[in-house]
Amino acid sequence: MSRKALGKGLSALIPDISQENGRIVYIECSKVLPNPYQPRKFSGKELVDLIESIKAAGIIQPIIVRRVAQGYQLVAGSRRLAAAKSLNFKKVPVIVKNVSDRELLSFALIENIQRENLNPLELAVAYKKLHDEFNMTHDEIGKIVGKSRAAISNTLRLLLLPDEIQKMIQSGELSEGHARALLAIKDKNKQIAFAKKIIKFALPVRETEKKTTQRLNSDYQVITEELEKILGTKVEISMGKKRGKITIEIYSDEDIERILSILKKK
Image (cartoon, rainbow, N blue to C red; front, side, top):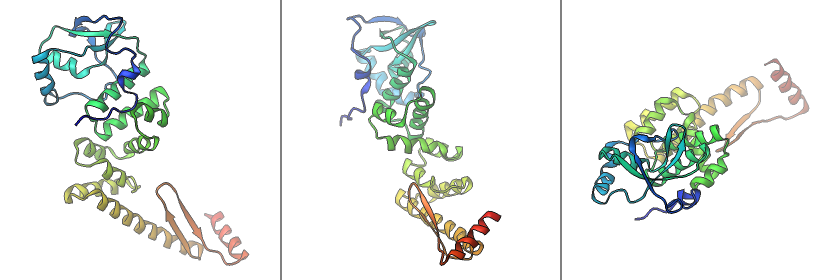
């Protein structure tokens, strides 16, 4: 089944990607420097099919490069270049384009999303580079890769999780859905402990969300009881997905003065 193109795609971002004034040149593989913004390293297993295809028909689609002080730098076609090197090709067909650093990262990200299915954590790291190094908003990133602003923001939130959990996402032990549910737990140690429980018992995402909500409600109950003891009145904590509120019941003006006095002391 063919995969629907995401966002603008490389062909829209690099005008006339198939040719440069009709010129395709051949340069030595060793002279093509890597793309420093490439968010993924390729394993041998991932290249097997491509290598077999190139063995049979050669490199049909030229690699895109840009000129740099040291020679050439890869823009798009990282898998093709890696496969060519595996086959000990001396030269590869390339098209030279004028590409900025900002575009270079965008192309690397889009190429991988469309062809390699980066895992959620790899996407988060790539999005963070676009945001931090090039001051792109979540909305701008979303337009490039064909996702909503909310989807970009949710993926970036995965980087708030402890390194141990991030490794679980990287390895595929935890899905993005599991990871998002864990974000509802604020204590890092509790997040890690619960993540291990998810893996041990193979909890589905819905069950994980249910249990994290129960855990939160339990935590809030302890806080509620503590506040009621301090303030001497009924307190209620309600929490939504993005914000919450604390309701303090009062029965008279004197209650307001008394509670205000307690809070000032604290």
